[in-house]
Length: 415
Ligand SMILES: [Zn+2]
Image 1: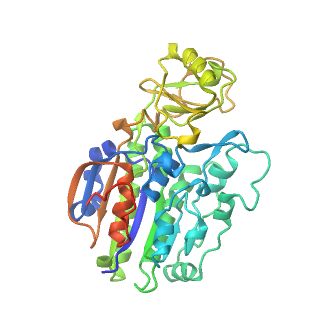
Image 2 (image 1 turned 135 degrees about the horizontal axis):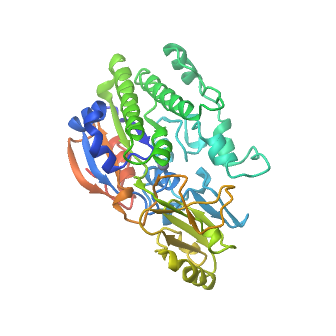
Image 3 (image 1 turned 180 degrees about the horizontal axis):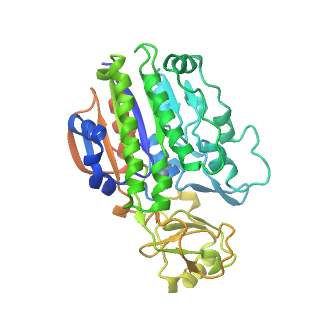
């Protein structure tokens, strides 16, 4: 048995959303039938994208891995900035696979160090999202962790496989006014690359391929959790899974590959945006959906809590922060159907307003809204199901599928 594994993270596919429309997703249903489904895979304590990715990669909770949100407090720069792969403090599935002598390929996935990959294809969102969108006036230096990801060259094997299947070897350029179609096209191209690399002869193909399908998150934020648009993005993800499976079939290697498909967090509806800067003018915070991470001394935070209380906002636990940060990082939790949204240049002076995103993730730690779907299938996966599992059970389950030593993970495999 080759114990090869494809991980496809579908950004924002919640447990509830999947359950509601799974009959429209025949390829995922097919995996479900022969594989293992976790009906409600809990999210990392802050159910946001980068913390969710890191949790899947490491099998450690955020206080151990060091990545608790999309943004992290940078003590050198004294500000919140987007987390990078270098912020991860614990071994990842990539470093573990490499140490075990296995070949690894990151194909458009985030939070993976290029040094841990035999093949690194950067995510299409890195340029705009992780590097530039932080509104830094200066361009990112070449040794910036995300810049290293962008600059990693593709391998000859990747170029050869693309040529064999007639695929593009890079993302197409963006065109004004076509952002969503561009994102979807990138997702589909990523899945083409996954299929092409996995269809290489078994002694040459990677042992671990990690990829992402990102458009659902974007469309969910914009159109809500029960829109036909959001359903359609999951249907697109399902078609991409079918395309990967078909390439494996055609290459005669389908019975040698395991595949794991899951979300990084869930989603829930939002009716009101809270603008913290209009309640506490000098507050230093990172809005992470319906939770906010605040940088303050305990005395300052006590005053902040007093000021936000009339809006139904309350202080939350600090258990997701690394122990040494708990004196200066604090959590605020928004009331139901509220999220923390920055002003993003909007001329607003009121403490609350209509939200730019009518759905979001990152709810009160433990909220069922952030539960996500998860299916694993293949020759190393028993058929069966589990009602629930914890975020830190993902990595040990993946390690077990790959036959990589899983003894030192804090949590157990789901099977
Ligand atoms: Zn996400």
